[in-house]
Length: 403
Ligand SMILES: Cc1cc2nc3c(=O)[nH]c(=O)nc-3n(C[C@H](O)[C@H](O)[C@H](O)COP(=O)(O)OP(=O)(O)OC[C@H]3O[C@@H](n4cnc5c(N)ncnc54)[C@H](O)[C@@H]3O)c2cc1C
Image 1 (spheres, rainbow, N blue to C red):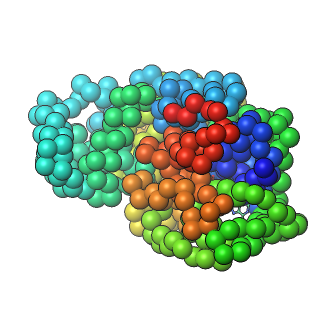
Image 2: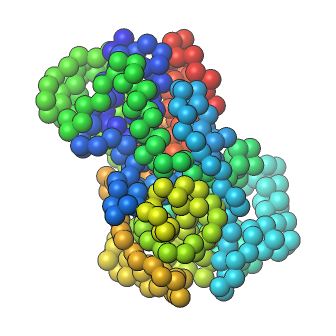
């Protein structure tokens, strides 16, 4: 059976590798001259500057992506973060749980009870007001860092699902070699199974007959396939097929990422630092504490993330830079890249909680990637979306143990 995968992002490559391992003939079409989409990196002055992700996997090696990578034969090493996270409050670093008053912890159990018994499920801004300042600040920072959203954009039930997944699988991890090591491994697996990666060859059109996709027209050729997997999200996929079945204007989450060269460690561990006194910068990580090769000798790669809630990107960056200057006072550092993410290169194609699954109106066309996540966040959500597709549509032929 011949499968065309449109887009060589993480979702496309993960699906292609799993299908190719199970005997499918897979061709991956990619518009750009590199694969990996928002989950790879380029070397700049010896630093691995990522195209998107902060070189982190939300649940490390025990999460859905870690498990799928193992099942497909990838041996990329993922170093689990220790501690998972800390908060920075008035220039003092505190370990997460000890900083929260018991009163706020009890509040969480009260909301849990209300949800379980009465099905009361408000957006989190309603609950944020009931919290002490530290707990409310952590809620905002955590959501800004992990999802680029604010408490008014997520319901209690969704946050609970994330919390449960953290309890089940643990916190984040950093792949040795960064995001690029993950996608390099997947491409190697696809190629070793006879699949192809066609760079600089965008798909222009999907040729349909009723509710079936018959052919794919790319910039270089027209080809017939049995199955089509799109890594572009539902909106762009619908456009390629000439049927705009899904509009999600304004549903993507947006952000800015700062890559910083620093001589001495600022965080000094492999976890996430949440600076609660900031209104723009939601979190920072220092991946070189897990893998020194992500920066040149004698330097660390510190990254900071800022969710975007307005369209005035220039002004937002000015404010973000101001906060970084305050945070990094006294350190020898240089900001080497500032990248903004929105429109068709966002932080998340569809905000967490609004995903619509892999199905399209076409019986042989499916969507993977962060426009079709499963019930988890970021690349672990992508892995769950891929796993669900394989389980429901390919389970006879793809004997992977899906998480
Ligand atoms: C600043 C930032 C920080 C992040 N941090 C993290 C993190 O630390 N951990 C984490 O888990 N996630 C993180 N994410 C999210 C994560 O990077 C993305 O969710 C993930 O990389 C998206 O993968 P995808 O499979 O949806 O594919 P994408 O990366 O969207 O790839 C789609 C591919 O399709 C190609 N394409 C588009 N149109 C066509 C066409 N017509 N024909 C052929 N190809 C086409 C594109 O060029 C692209 O390569 C972050 C994102 C950003 C922006």
